[in-house]
Image (cartoon, rainbow, N blue to C red; front, side, top):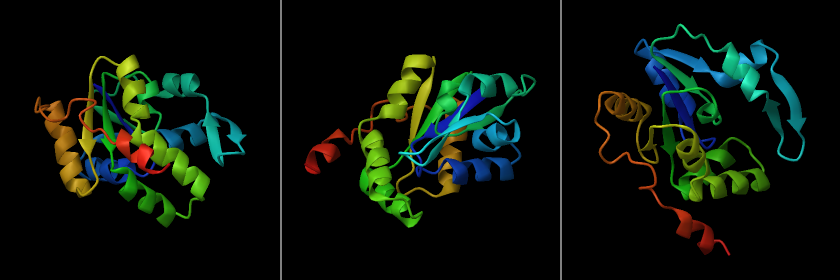
Length: 173
């Protein structure tokens, strides 16, 4: 089973992935794999981000992986059996991104995307099963527990769309 562990930058994907790897699960960092396989096809100068050939990257994923986590903010765009979207309250997310040294324009773009559920909506449009895990105040271990619980059928409270921070955007204007 391929699980897309996805979410807006800063929601905790790397931390949760590290915890899952520590527990023995197979974790694929999509950014690392894209770099290793030379699948970076450009740079978005306005955003300061690398552009990945997602279709080529999808073909590079080892099809023999029985249970693997594909980790990246675009993981839900690859072939997966289900997606777990990590979510974080926009105000906390902004603090996390600023702590990384990100500029205000990039912080705002990502916080707005989180507030209006961009990744959840994209995942729901593509994949048969999508769940959300709120990471705002959770530890990586607790978030990993929630992810594994979803895989064990404990999905109540993780339905897509239950976290609604759209009013946050209106408060900024």
